[in-house]
Image (tube, rainbow, N blue to C red):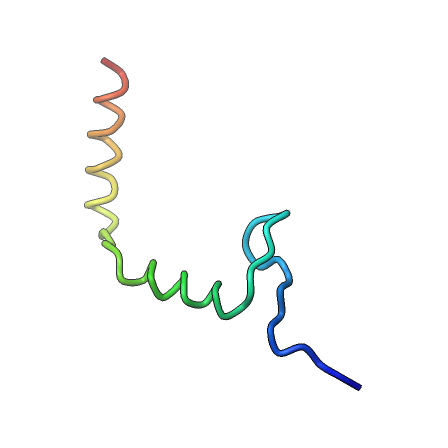
Length: 54
């Protein structure tokens, strides 16, 4: 019985196959991004709402 080393099952977006290795690398890349506290997020959200309501 043979097994696949590269699993091309869709792990992210329907219709676009992605390997688990690629998916994990994208998660690591996202974790390096900017994270906000709850208060900072609320502040950014309110600023965004004011901007689009003009």
